[in-house]
Length: 325
Image 1 (cartoon, rainbow, N blue to C red):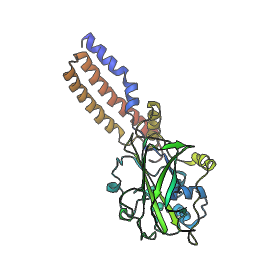
Image 2 (image 1 turned 90 degrees about the vertical axis):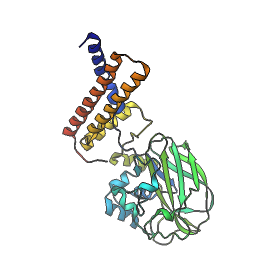
Image 3 (image 1 turned 180 degrees about the vertical axis):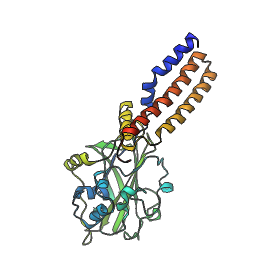
Image 4 (image 1 turned 135 degrees about the horizontal axis):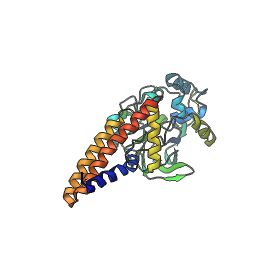
């Protein structure tokens, strides 16, 4: 190997730590929930995961344990990318098809609810890890029956409120909307689609128009900041995100996921990515007139990335314990 080629390979190996930081896999992030009107999961968390008061929240704990309540700000799909109606099945809108949150889908008329009236309304969505994106609110059609599983056809086809990059005020996204006329018990469904990532978050908020909730259906209370802070210690939620975060955050969260999941199949993912990177680099060099030294740096760096990623995750797999988020 010539001196130039030897130097090129050495340079490629030298960039491995930085490149691995840039390519590490980040965990699903959790970023908040609707607090006005209060979402189901927020209301149950506010009642206390270990000893909720309402029958509906007790049933949720019986169905899935207390962890879904401590993880009240994680009802998400990491790769939604706007495909909400295509990937969330009827009957599972509130859990977004995640078994962890299956208790949220229970069709019953006694979920804790918030009073609601037609007309102008200010909404609040508690953002525990703010990100840029678009919030949409949908409301159930007249004739909605809360004792039946919620279907997409139960919601109006178009959102009655929509805002992009809403203002952040005291830790919550705050925005206004015009609530349509309704009577009796209904549900408001929120979708927060991030613009810096395919990740999306969802909430179901039970509301009552025209007076107080019927007997047996308690008023929903939003969790206090003190409750949110105290409950964070029992949360399994990571706030790494899928885009727009710093390299240090991505690296730390990737290591956290590797430790909890045993690494999964991340090495294969990294190898495939770095192989593609090498091919792309070769094409780019050919088009721009790069010399052979540049080529060796690109290919050597890609190979080192693949080996480094595989080694990192293999090591994590050996020492890991616990289950996936």
